[in-house]
Amino acid sequence: MQKAWWKESVVYQVYPRSFMDSNGDGIGDLQGMISKLDYLKELGIDVIWLSPVYRSPNDDNGYDISDYQDIMDEFGTMKDWEQLLKEVHNRGMKLIMDLVVNHSSDEHKWFVEARSSKANKYRDYYIWRSGKDGKEPNNWGSNFGGSAWEYDEQTDDYFLHLFSKKQPDLNWENPVVRKEIYQMMTWWLEKGIDGFRMDVINFISKVEGLPDDEVKPGKKYASGSKYYRNGPKIHDYLQEMNKEVLSQYDIMTVGEMPGVTPELAKLYTDDDRHELNMIFQFEHMGLDNGANGKWDLKELHLKDLKANLSKWQTELEHSGWNSLYFNNHDQPRSVSRFGDDKQYHRESATMLATLLHMMKGTPYIYQGEEFGMTNVSFASIDDYRDIETLNFYAEAKEQGQSEEQIMASIYEKSRDNARTPVQWDDSDNAGFTSGEPWIQVNPNYKKVNAKQAMEDPGSIFHFYRKLIQLRKQYEVVVYGSYHLLLEDHPEVFAYKRTLGHQELYVICNFYGKPATIDLDKVSGGQLLISNYKETETKELRPYEARVYLVE
Ligand code: TEU
Ligand code: CA
Image (cartoon, rainbow, N blue to C red; front, side):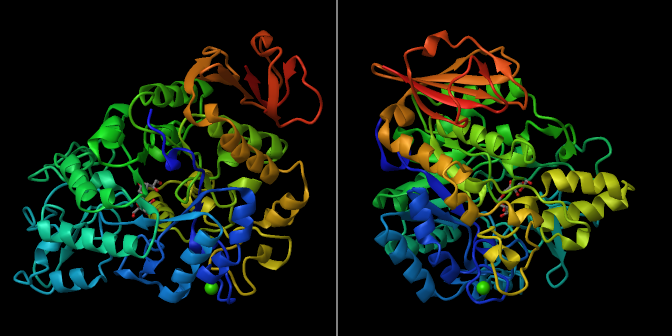
């Protein structure tokens, strides 16, 4: 296995709108972020992944970009951004930017031109089709609900949008589009950034003819995803992008890829294929989805999580590289989702962190995760901001679901769970803003906040610091091979990492009741970290996590 700095790094994701507001308008911004860089340094992370800060009408909080080479007014100016990059580098950290090029905003000048006439030279930058029998060109649904097509009166055609109708899909078949994108990427790289996180990058190649998909019973639209995920030209495009742009720089790349298997992941991330360094897979994020998708609630079964994560660990053992995550701006908070955010808040948050950070791959921490931020339950749908959540609410209402049932799904799965402001301290609005926050602060901020966590040596924050340090200290954490232990144990997730003569044993009680295991194997080993203060017991206590080194 080839060594690389991005394999040895820990990445921290900043969702700038919710991170830190410097000027009291209630919206996080670049100066706010700069004021918190020392905090990130203290945590010990290596790389910051910055969610979009480009010019955007914010239909999807910056994932709808109207100018790829400018900064959103609410966040500051290009000068602020340049200062940010400099200050990140001054502290020995790196900065990777979000690259959102499956689609742009409908307010991007390319789309404004494109929709103005069929003859316009930008027309072919997007995916236009005429209607079929007075209806949409095909039966695909958008990922945010409704049809994936929007009718445009002016030119009497439909355009494709796999996300909101303000996010028209770019036409990657057009070589001019690809060239524009590569130029834009190079422009950012020349400014000195350290890589890209690529939004739904495995959606960019669509199957020719855009065929109809099967409509499932009770649904209005088909998924269509088998015709646009991992499409026929995806590897050509990524290899071209690598050759033209990525290979010219010492950077890291991570592709967000819903609907990938380990087989595909190897194709995307094998060093010798020259595509990407790693990807975000989604399989483990779907284990608590019912048959009808994310809003259809189902409990996570530990055996499914073990089987899934172990499969990824093992399959990518010799080729490719894993990204490790339980949280991001699209997912509910893992301590609420897989742990216990009440009685065992600290124990379960640290257990989940141990489980993830000791695996093989590059770990990602999402803002607030490092001190245990939780899901939120706002009283009314009016308190929610996320387009996916609002569209789901409207659709579910229309279908006659009860308010109670709809809100129950939203409380568990809404993306806004991850988007409430970072809770810095116990002052008004959790120290995020002196004004009115764009989305309400989680009311638990008096207890759950960064200040309190930093002051308490036994906190989740200090546990994360220690996990990050262990990665720096022991090569086995980065490069050791993975073996699942106690495969059939119903409550304990345990595995071993091996490198040379070193063995690392990671033992996690996944539930809030005691569990027994045979600890013989680790006797004589050194306890590197544990989330209980008292001495080692025979029994694992609720959500107990331990890591032993055996040499
Ligand atoms: O997410 C892609 C994606 O698959 C999610 O939209 C996912 O379907 C949903 O969040 C599950 O609930 C990326 C970005 O991370 C997301 O924030 C954007 O909204 C989306 O692309 C469109 O750019
Ligand atoms: Ca602000």
